[in-house]
Each structure stands twice: as structure tokens, then as C-alpha cells.
Image (cartoon, rainbow, N blue to C red; front, side):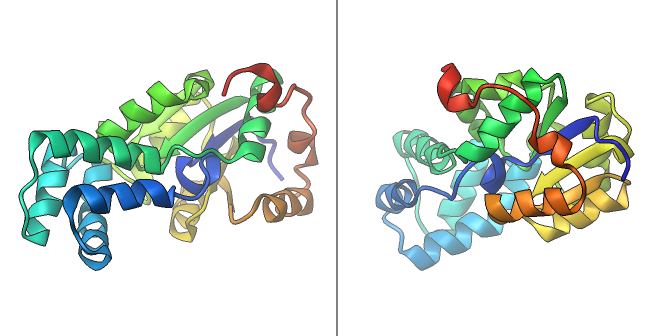
Length: 220
């Protein structure tokens, strides 16, 4: 196994917990849409939003148009806020491990398919995001996972060859793309399964780095 010199994290469902259902319910209330209509239009346009093909106003107006409604400027602000809140909950054991890696001097990065307004909102809410050595946000590059170029950009930003980068993501297609550019990669499902896979790969030295957990250092 090639030595890991940097660990690269997806945000959603890796650094974050599951989406907050209360925030999704707020979006339904704001728009007045049924679950079926909001789900259809939101996800039909979300990849383009993540990739930067759409910005926040164009995304939400496209969602509204597809559902046959018009949203006001006030509703737009409320929808952006609710959408950000949906991805606010954190994954505590992963954040704890990230901060221990950082205290041990191991380079860390975020590679996330994330739209413009959500990046701004989450960075304002989670100050621990600033401690990563490098951030790769899809909207800023007009690229998105699983496009190979975005992985190479992340490795370059970490000043680490792909072979020495461990990438962690919840989606198998994103894992496969990381492997195709020469990274090491693990699909994240649960934290217990993740640690078991780390042990199986002989990466215990990364799990055992010393540092105070995030919940005790006031950075959350």
C-alpha cells in the first residue's frame, strides 16, 4: 500500500450527516409544492447547480418553472437558506478524525459537488471548514465529480501525487473516478464500516493519529 500523505473528503454524507428533513419540509412549505414535484425538479437540476452551470437564482427559478410556479425574491432567499440548512448537520466521528489528522500534520482537503450559495452558507456556519489545506468546490471550476479533471485539481491543490491521496466519498461512481486517476479511495457508508475498511487496508496509522476530538476543542 502506497503511503497516504493527504486525505481528501467529500462533504455530503461524509463530513455531513444525513440531510435534515425539517429543512426539506421548509422548502416544500415555501414553494407550496408536493413532495413529488419538489423532488423531481430539485434533483433534475441539482447537478447543473453543483457544477456551476446554474447559480442560486437561476437554479431556483428553473425549479419553480418546471413545477409551474413563480417564486418571489423573498422566497428565493428563504429557499437558499433552507437548502443550506438541509446539509448543516455534521458527522461527528468524521469531523473528530479530520481534526486529529490536521493536528498530526497530515494534509486534508475537501472535494465536493456543491453550488455557490451553499458553499458560502456552510462556510459561514461551520468555521472548521477553513482548517482544510485545500478546498475544491465544483461550482467554482465548472466541473463536477465524477469528471477526472476535478480530482486532479484537488490533488494539485494538496501538492500531493494522486497515488498518495486517500479519497473518501459516499457514491461508488465518485470512488471509481478517483481510482481511475490513481488515487486510493474508500466508499463511506457508516463510520464503523469505514474504520473496518481502514483496518483491512493497513491504514490503522491514520486512524491512530493523536489529537483532541473536535467536540472538545471548541471549533464546531
